[in-house]
Length: 69
Image 1 (cartoon, rainbow, N blue to C red):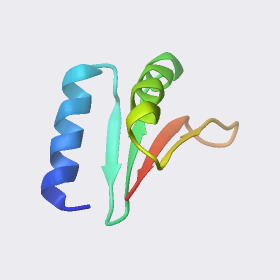
Image 2: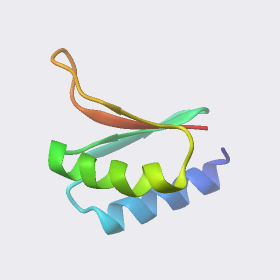
Image 3: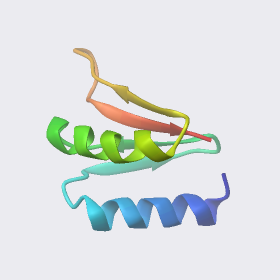
């Protein structure tokens, strides 16, 4: 995924979901952090339109969504 496309996705997400606390990007993914309710909303929207989206909830780390590219 190009940096420009990642930046567009980040911009869209932060505009649509102001409760996002952080988005980390690397060459192959975006990792989105927010409260659980917001993450569920984001997951519901992304899951319908993207093939490779993971929602990770765990006791040892903050809940997050990963969009793999």
